Length: 202
Image: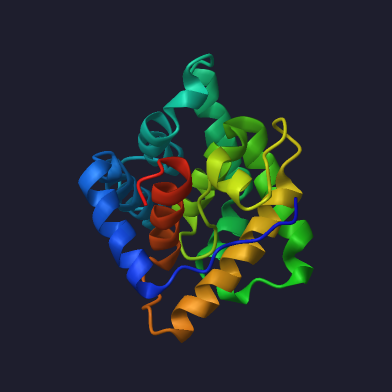
């Protein structure tokens, strides 16, 4: 299947946002996690970035942990991810997805691959998005499938994620040209994708 992404209209995003807020109470955990991660990265929180990420991972990605332990070792593994990629995260936080180029493929695949090894293909995208919310888009299995990028076994999805970033970049450019503000655009696109492909609410 050829990879492709539907370009939603601005009105589609608005409708999806309303539907998402009506039907998805877990959005509060996303907002809380964003605040916690921002505080941890600024250094004005008693929480570490890994602990802040755990707020979202244990709610938005709970399916992944049905047969896996979210124990002390797992937290240490997330700690190591954050520490080993702190420079990469700082760089990405200063970028938007619009700045992504084909030359960034190896960089993206390396960082995503490391996160995927610990958090799985969906959890990796969620964690990276929280760390750099204007650069890394969110996905899940249904969304990837709908884009022609069906997820494979853990450890083999970094190329697919980079292709998904390129597709989402196209969506962002089209929506901005239609007058949609850039603030939280990746989150709004994810709400549209989630409502349409994951839940079938649209």
